[in-house]
Amino acid sequence: MSFRFMRISTNILKIKETLPKEVTLVAVSKTKPVSDILEVYQTGHRDFGENKVQELVAKQQDLPKDIRWHMIGHLQRNKVKYIAPFIHLIHAVDSLRLLKEINKQALKNNRIIHCLLQIKIASEETKFGLTQNEVAALLSSEELKTLHNIRIIGLMGMATFTKDTKQIESEFCRLKAIFDNLKHITFENCSLQELSMGMSNDYPIAVSCGSTMVRIGSSIFGARACSLE
Ligand SMILES: *Cc1c(COP(=O)(O)O)cnc(C)c1O
Picture 1 (cartoon, protein in one colour):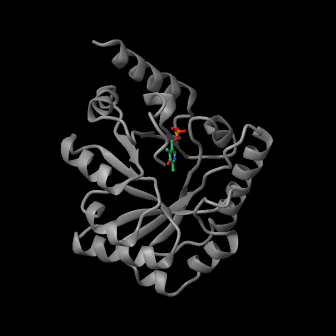
Picture 2 (cartoon, rainbow, N blue to C red):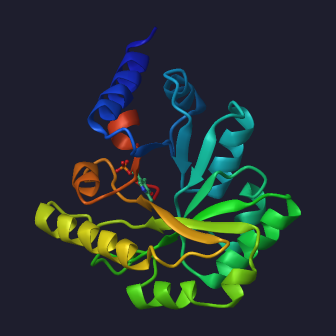
Picture 3 (cartoon, rainbow, N blue to C red):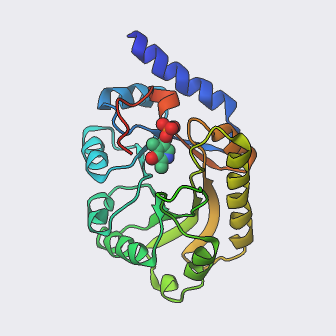
């Protein structure tokens, strides 16, 4: 057993100890080799997240088939077809056009694909996502109700990259409030139950604000060589 194995497996077990039982941990393995993922897999962990389609597809082919793969990055419509056969959850959906394409590819694969809608909560310009008004409009669209091969099961968001914990807390709590406001909207293919928020640097704040799913990379696998997100 290598020291690296000891370190990665110790990291994930320690993080799991601090998380409430009902919070799902998605181990974000982007840029990390298959060998590192297998080391986490061997601790019994099954939920892994990637943010690039090509990397996700390559790793899915090389790794055990009972892994639940989460697409956490921005997804282009022309790439949905590559992940539709196996994806467990798509976290960052921010348009009806993308939902329609996911529905089409899900139908082709005879599957129902679970999705989260990404809400823009950060103050940075570059982050994707819907505003509170846009998500409300999307959920009231009649066309959405015709997409029988998708399920909208929750919301996702990313806080501003800052050391100001008060700002992070206010952004996560705002997302929780949006989630609570929309939770009563349920129909055949929509029922908001999951709230995906929290990364290595801010997940304890996200959990205290009501996160049900945290996406943690560097605190498990170590720092990434260069920033590819
Ligand atoms: C990379 C990434 C994460 C994990 O980031 P860490 O800081 O390494 O924990 C979480 N969510 C998204 C959308 C990401 O792209």
